[in-house]
Amino acid sequence: MTKKYDFLIVGAGFFGSICARELTNQGYSCLVIEKREHIGGNCYTEKRDDIHLHVYGAHIFHTSNERVWKWINQYATFNHYTNRPIANYKGELFALPFNMWTFNQLWQVNTPEEAQKIIAEQGKDIVDPQNLEEQAIKLVGKDIYEKLIKGYTAKQWIKDPKELPKEIIKRLPVRFTFDTNYFNDRFQGIPEGGYTQIFEKLLDGIELRLNVDYLADKEAFNTLANKVIYTGPIDSYFDYQHGELEYKTTRFDHVKKEYPNHQGVAVMNYTDAEVPYTRIIEHKHFEFNETEKTWISYEYPEPYQAGKTEPYYPVNDALNNELFSKYKALAAAESQVYFGGRLGEYKYYDMHQIIERALTMVETFTP
Image (tube, rainbow, N blue to C red):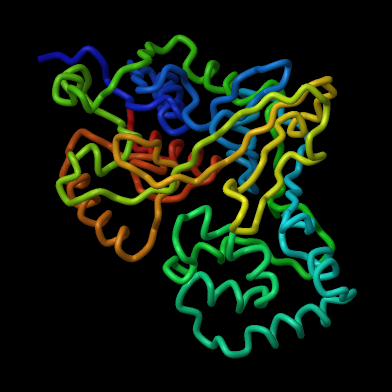
């Protein structure tokens, strides 16, 4: 039986939208279906009072991959925003990422050597870190761990840092310079006019159906196309037959303020355990907006419940990785279904990595 489409693409976030665009450009017919009422996945931005609000949390584009940078610039013009977040510990403010300004603020040291000596002394009893707490103390010392990492991490992951893998903290930049630019990447910025426009251009001319739950009638949808690209949670695709994978999820509380400037920075992390939210985002600062009002977002971590809360980040500890390996084996046995993205591959990807991964997958399909 002849199928109506070459590809059914499940999910209109970055991975699915890129695949749809690139495959359409190659001459394939594509149908994109999306469970939400909008395109863009977690990168979706919404215009409110001339401010582009990042509905699902801050998305700051950064990459050193020139191919990815050239590709994304086909669809938007990026400004020169660089991420310089502030940590707030019980009213004390510290520069992030951890750098000489942080060490000076905390220890009144002026040189890298002074800072390194304090860190080495505070971490000397840890030879082979076994968890996030031990890795953090080895990396930046006990003082910084106690003030700027412990409470924030416990809130963010809803777990004791001793129970988290050490690899998580290794992603955190630590610098013995006065450079407060969070990312080392050559290219970075925020798209002028928000992210949603990118997805509108990617999906232009491609059949799109919103508010459609693929898993509610998976077999029927699969009859529509020769191949399926699935970007949802891999465990839900297989009806949780090996059990539920764990994800980190967040509730966003968006609040309008009737004054022009709430905190003077786009991202402020609240690192003590007593404050229930992990950070406040003030969206206007992403685009240097001069509006008379402002929008802020409080981020509250919440326990993940499969099918009830949004899965944002995979929890790649040993237990979940072992479980994922079973789902990966099931996915490999699917001859015409391809799994991609954070949820489909149960892997943390930044936006630039998702773009590269999607472009690479599309290259495997030849006309």
